[in-house]
Length: 280
Image: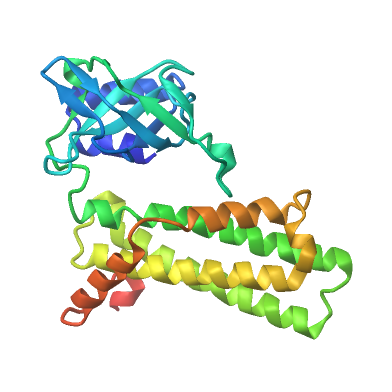
């Protein structure tokens, strides 16, 4: 979704039409920006050199939006077209969670881009407030994982006949509070995004605060899950075990400390953004 949105936002009419056709034809899009220096760069005007690392759906996605020449104003977006299994391989070491994403590397050595595959202008990928504000979609994914985890814990406690235990109920109450706290933050972020225009002042900073709130809610719930289910939560045949691993891994989004610092600096001198019922 993020890859397609970047084409829709920064691409020209022909590129938008082509992306729509690709989606209808079943092409899976991905965005790959992580790389090992010197990264993916243009060699002359004809081809590329370098590879991307930690690419979700490596070998599966057939349309990869990548950043080229990141050292120059954050790089320029390029829509690459590759066949399943082409130019890809697994990363060394197995991730703790998110294993089903088939994370690997994609090599763009001697890749020749199409003239109409360059998207937008240099620096578009990191352009604010869209770059930071768009992180609310990551929070929506985390919220889905959090809701699944709370639901599974409740089912297992009921199946064990432990749902009448007051200590278990107290933990369930705290996990439910954490889930609803995350839901409220993400709901406001979605309203502030307002269809993707991010025009409200302070939206990126508000999303930065939401990142901290959702992380805290998820970490609290992980701890409560382990206390509630005990060692059973760590058995790989227990449905709660991959939920915990995936959630803990996906929580490791970049530069949260920096995001919170920037948000605090902004809201020390500016009002919080308000939308809908909050503005009344």
